[in-house]
Length: 232
Image (tube, rainbow, N blue to C red; front, side, top):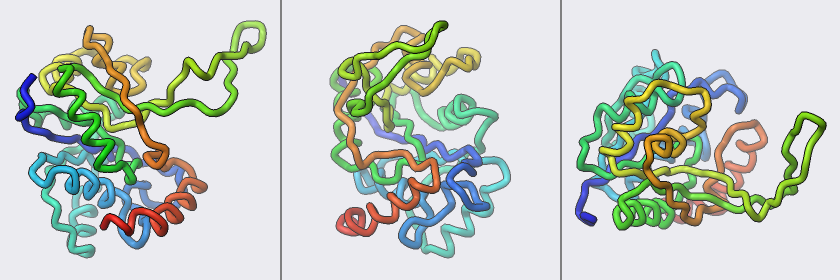
């Protein structure tokens, strides 16, 4: 364990994300008058002002993003990388800017309300255990699994919902991402786990929800008004 290893984050904003409504990809749409992606960057900047921040943007949007930064006087330092065909390829592009001796987080741009405490919890666990770390929350709904003859009930107490940031020793995730893309990869942990790296679960947070639908935007605006203003 090396507690002094440099920390970095890849913020994945490489998709078009139009399901959330509007003409712009959701990462550029505003919450409280500021693009969602800026809220996400600020969350990691608050945690560690010295950490390297890599932002993966969809092709053709780099100039647009730079203009947004000027308009909003946004000065958090970050590096830009072009996104790929899938999330897998976008993360792989971002990893090219990460050194092997770092501890790196991969985070969804659409989770702008991640707290400093949660980011810290993930990084510290990755450093202590030298493994992949992912935050999870309990499933509160009843769930069923489809079968060939219909469906069957699952014990929700045995299920967890996965969030980001997912944090890894950089050398291990970079090695894992030398593999070929597989549609079965649903997140970074699934890529790293296939290469034999253990995954540790830590407690996630309810407020660290992913903005996907128009309804989520309504929730996000309410959350911003009642919570995020207190820490900015």
